[in-house]
Image (cartoon, rainbow, N blue to C red; front, side, top):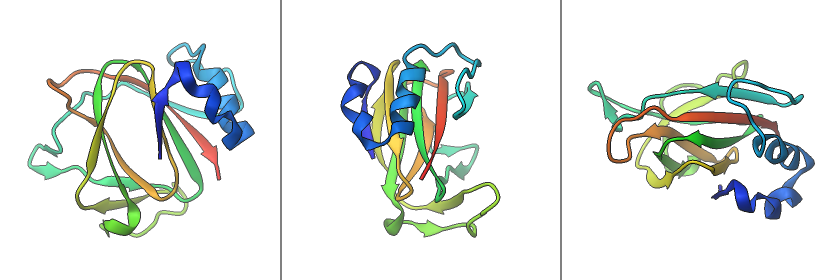
Length: 145
């Protein structure tokens, strides 16, 4: 997993040309407008506790894609763990490229302009409440492995 701020993203261009293209797009992103050939998912989740509505939030992990989570506006906690430390809750869904897992999460705080690059071994729980529940504007770029 890589954590950083968009202002310092150029040092990660070396990882791949797709990651470089994603960062160049994100530097000028207009919420909801995808002007690239990359897959970009926009969302505005309301942050919540890990134990939201009596159910513990689950980790997600992917095998075919790297997720580049970028915070356009707002603040959230972001849970993460190596998939080898977690227990599967579902079978891997090859069509939609995800598996849900449970276990203990480490947490980081993401603010406007921050990003996380989650590789296939990086299970993650986005949109956790920081201090108060709030709407967070985000873009997630799906980068093929």
